[in-house]
Image (cartoon, rainbow, N blue to C red):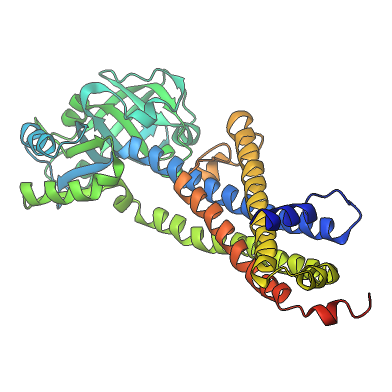
Amino acid sequence: MKTAFRIAFRHLGFKHQGSFTSFASIAAMVGLGLGVCALVLTSSVLNGFEETISSKIAGIDGHIRIQHFLFKPVTPYKTRLDSILTSSNVSFSTVAYVQEAAMVRKGRSAEGILIVGHGDDALPKSINQMIRKGSASLQKGHIIIGNDLAAALKVKVGDKLVLVDMKSMVSISSGQRMKQATVSGIYKSGLQEYDKSVVYMTLADAQTLFQYDEKVSGYTINIKDGKRARVLASRIEETLGYPNYAITWKEKHRTLFNWLNLQKWPILIIFGMIALVGIVNIISALTMIVLEKIRSIGTLISMGMNKKTIRRIFLIKGIYIGVMGSLAGLGVALILAGIQIWFKPLSIAEDIYFMSHVPVLFDWTIIGLIVLCSFISSIFAALWPTHRASSVEPAVALRYE
């Protein structure tokens, strides 16, 4: 075994830089390293996109929403809901909300909006972090609007707007229900669906405007482990029964998350083909090394070295190229990803991608699988050249010596 290692590393020691063995080995390592680097970076960026969008939406809508099946107001049942969550052994927070369609007016300008009266007189976590102008606190008689809506109405912090209940506009039995409110803050989420149409106010103001009395539209639930949301939502819905309806943030935005999942696998397959090219390079490199060292192989066999040791020599070469190429590719990927995380040189259009820079998030399980698959593939890639080396006949190899 020591002999096989000594001979293998002698060939791969790169002491003879002009030899084809050195060039072929380095080329194989570089090819495999580029493939691993591309896969690690791609998977990390895709994970970053999904996590950033997921956390941003979950921070706005909550991980779970409980509401009436027909979107009607309901009598508060926070105590009962909290008891269900407590028995599920999860870390949670429950907030009541009122949500209704309305119209906002500023002079002759008007826009259709969705008013959200948020309980505890506090903004959702994500919106609170997205305030660009004004205050992030909800106060009676004040509202917080999105950046796109502010631009459409040409309003700024401190301006007064008129809010009109949309249902009262189509009802014959009663007049229009209106309320004047002052803009106290402007947020920018990067999600046009929110920035253009969602307006936040205190729960009490929303209940007054829409004549909810003490009722609410439902509850938002935030939990520590978002992966348990679907199971927990099913349990809540089953326990509360009809007409209560539970929906997770991923189900509410199913189209968006389906799009993310749809694009993930084709991209990984395409970049995986780069790693496949690196594996092919290992086969080619070891095959060329066998051809270059065929006389040395013949000499070793004629001196009594068995074919098992010859196979071991070239298998060690393949493993070495695979390990070094995989680790080098992983190292380069981590360095490039670290530069993006800390310095953010790659920026993107926030209005399109919901974020201002390319996000990177490491999934060490996926990264480990990429490196492991690369290593295992390099071993299999070395099998055919290894068999070719062990089948060399000494008489043929030394014919022209």
